[in-house]
Image (spheres, rainbow, N blue to C red):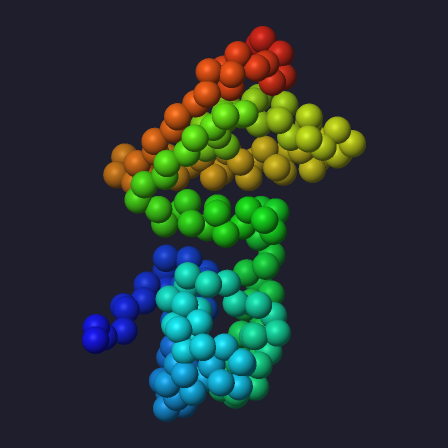
Length: 178
């Protein structure tokens, strides 16, 4: 059986939380199974939390604080992880993009977010949120453009995109934007 995976706390906030969980669990002399029992989860689930592949939920964080005597560490940091600038349904994907070595995407409707220009992103956000204030749209566009900065590193990630021809023919924001 292989040894425990080496954790890189700098990889993501979730990996940092996982590394701390492993450290505190081992310091308490508990196996993953032992720690999982009071949370009503399996040892492999604890392993996924430790590896940063699974998102810790607030109720789990509270129980971990109690079992490990962590004085609120997991609750505080779990709440900080939820304070993402991305919508709840997309936060995990944005986090995965930051550590990915390869991203493959098929785009049948819109130009993928990582490839959108500022004007295109603004047009898309405005179309989907017509009543949003300009400040909200500006914030969304800034987040989208910030995400695209991962493509400025010449070594990672490798991005493969297949666009449906309709994506290029469908005007979003008018001819000037396209």
